[in-house]
Length: 101
Image (tube, rainbow, N blue to C red; front, top):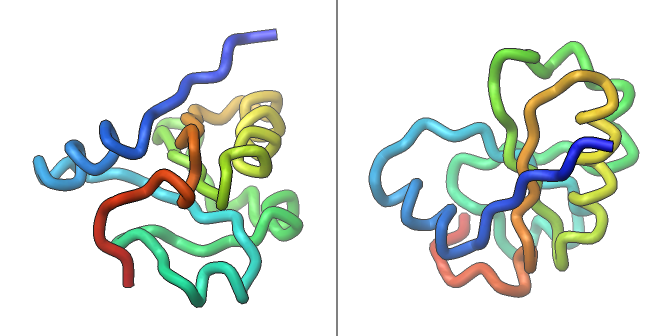
């Protein structure tokens, strides 16, 4: 199995601050996202990812985010198996120090 790419919250924050165009997908549940979503992230709960595959473009890398990085890792593995470019934010929102909306 292909190794899963990761990004740390600090690295992600630096990319955002540098103005990089990123595709961020938060897979937490509604009640969790209500506590704060990284600016620019799209919210698609983990259970809804399989039904929303047409949203994703295989030529774009997506960064998946959850609370601790366990669920986003599962989603990354699933997406990778389906031919998508993905990266998991390790540590999840528990480690995120940047702005949220």
